[in-house]
Image 1 (tube, rainbow over the protein chains, first blue to last red):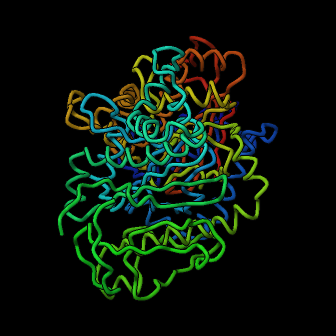
Image 2: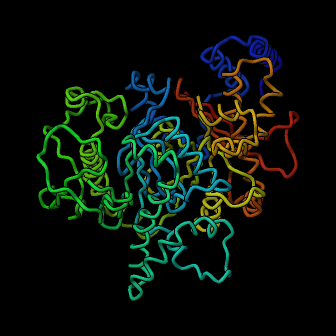
Image 3: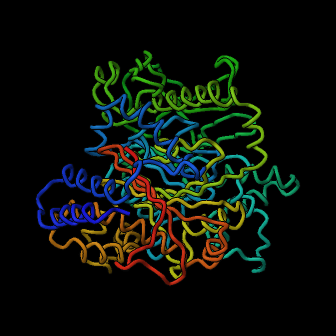
Length: 259
Length: 303
């Protein structure tokens, strides 16, 4: 804990921050960091005995040293604002980060990650989280592409496919969420009743991407941007079992327009 | 499948009609080793290859940022090219497959059987703050949720995509750590601080960020004489703490934290100065420190 005289300095600095409202972000940030350093004397660094902390510290340190410090102009531009070309919907699954598989760099993709990379249909009452993402990406950031990426061995899709649909055995939140993909499940089951569960799940992983693309179309600003030629919808599928990636061409799911 | 126009000449001018396409079957053998299946794609074929701009270190150029300058784009004016994007995605995936997937095949094959991440990370959807990037999380390490302003709604708010992910991560994957990461210049927090009318039902953004209303109230109480930018900055961190408290409203999270099976951490990434702060929630039911804020321990600051 900081000693008495250090504590006095901390109080003076806090007073300076609260009294001077016009310091600007940069100066304010520097004073805050000084306060943080004074408050916790000793090395301003990780508690190396804790492997969790060390893991996060090592990752950040590597990023700062190898990327941030080596590309000051890029990161200075990004600090002023973001202009990503993509909105990406990907699964929360730890194996499918689009930053890895498609090498999205800082600034390139506004990224939503949720269970089974689902996009619900426009609903004025619920799903405000996804609605906020789409509204911000299309309305404010004016992204040019929306990419929905499904993947192999998706736990959320498996839950959807194995859910008894009789009201029993409920996982409160998961089951409510994956129900967004119910039409995809029904289609796969009706068209492929004799396939194994694994095969049906794989088909549903892709059908759910198409379903999400159709749901995107139900957002008025998405539809308008597509029809204006300012937005393109993509569906992708990452198969990490075989190391493959495909674009699902028919995931655009747009009404046929006569030429 | 939608009707397709017959293959047209591969010119550099593009129709503005989003439905005009040619179809090309890409034989995976011609692509070399690889992972693109023999599938039909709709592409516009560029007349020349877009030059890639090399950046320092191991970063590939930000080819998908709107302001990218390249010879080809400049020569035909600013146009959107589906072919360029398709080629870009293909190139990047093949590069990932070659440099990472094949180099670590056994690891990826094990991951394909099951994931066992130790972390669940809740981060903002902002394009500048991907946890895989700034904290170097590798495939298999972190189950990630990304939403506007990295918010965790409370249990009583009912089902949402965020708590569906919480349920899966905590109860099925049994992660050991949850890390909520806020960041500088957050548009969602700015929207929260600017919000005039909570009842505005026309905006999803308003209806979502209102989850952070306590963070705004705390911020306004603590920083009433500061400028708006400074208040937003304070709120970015305050919102993380509110999310940490909201995590404890989930009974199955609270139980695991109480038993020491799960740790809950807050983080703050400042991408202006490139600093990272991290702290851990000090769990003691019903107790906060004297300033009535979240009790924390093991605070670190890295620059």
